[in-house]
Length: 117
Image 1 (cartoon, rainbow, N blue to C red):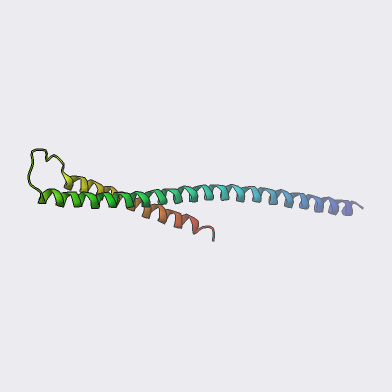
Image 2 (cartoon, rainbow, N blue to C red):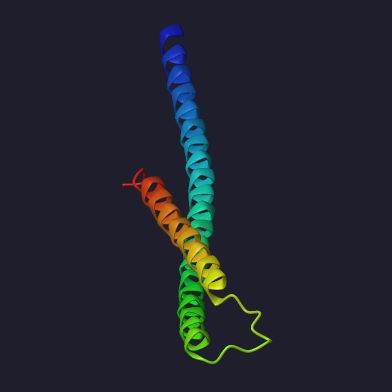
């Protein structure tokens, strides 16, 4: 009789351990999913903002380039204080930085989402 009670107790103990393991594994997976979704949302927002900023700075650089051409072809005046070439270079530099931010966030997002599959 001792063997039977020991076997029943051992089976109940194993079932209890299996339930605990299942619960802890589910909790770990949910925490990991929440952190991955937060990182993916943050990276996608950053990529969107940086590509929009790149577009606006590109338009500004084209505008400064046009004003530079107009300024060079017009008559010289006393109030000629705008340096359109410098402003164009600032816009082009900002555009390069924003575009590299877009590429970096896209690459980082692709690397992080590659672990899920």
